[in-house]
Length: 434
Image (cartoon, rainbow, N blue to C red; front, top):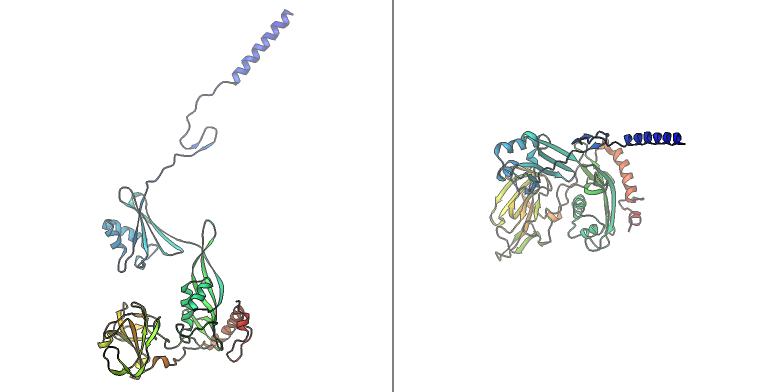
């Protein structure tokens, strides 16, 4: 028994020594700053926090340059040149637009760290300072897409209000009226119950994070219709072969664009018509009124009613500040009087295009209030511009006729037209969604 007890004691002692050897605490190892621990676990380096930037926004004024803006902010000439040279690799600084904004980020020591500019909603340009006080430029473009949209409506008060009620903006209203401006005076002719349809493109930006679309801008109007009580005007858009610009034609391929506009501005009312004799409101004498007076707010833009060449730009007696334009080699001349000021680049000898702004409504010269005096001359003789029936532009090119007719059928289906006869669109009003 004594021998057995001794043997058990020896075995217990050996086991105790073995257990204690397995519980030995390892030596403390230093933890690396970055990389992997001795156990292979990754460890991040301490985050380097960049210095906080102070941001400023500069509004680009007319005539300002990027150099003048940065120099005025206090940047050195050499650094300004480096920034402009860097920006030029992705964007021409001369294309900075008046009214846009530059966003500048400054370091605590006053140095410019970044410059941001968006020439369009889908484009972002950024210039950043790098090591060694150098700069880099990056141009980012957000993904966009387009979709075709059909808007229809009925006029209760005005076309403007009807298009707003359909969920669209004044920009679409202007694009729509531009198509029919030679045939409809949208200030005087629309009546309650008139209807319209506009098939157009809408462009959207896709948010890179959420994927949600945001409206960017309107694209071309593909087809448009205006329905009066007993008459319908339907325009089909077809790109011009030489430059791809959208032109509008009727069902027979005749151009909606005419040689002269119905009116050269957006006016409130006609305050005086063409007349062989009227009592002048200031001179108090009966004399011919060889034009039409359009009452409008001071500063309302006035556009050229047709392509032509400026033959007078400046003061002209009782007409005050005046622009005269020669059209069709002098066969027609138009006069725009009482302007408050002329548009930039409008000077004698300059060429102008139809719908180009040439001046702004005023009351210069002999005038009782702000309005435009508009006179049209035919072979040197004044004629009533409201009675002129301007000629249409060039029809669809014969080589494009088949392609145009195929596109026309497609657009009629999209607009809901199912029968056309003698210029009347019988099924149109019933097929348009109310």
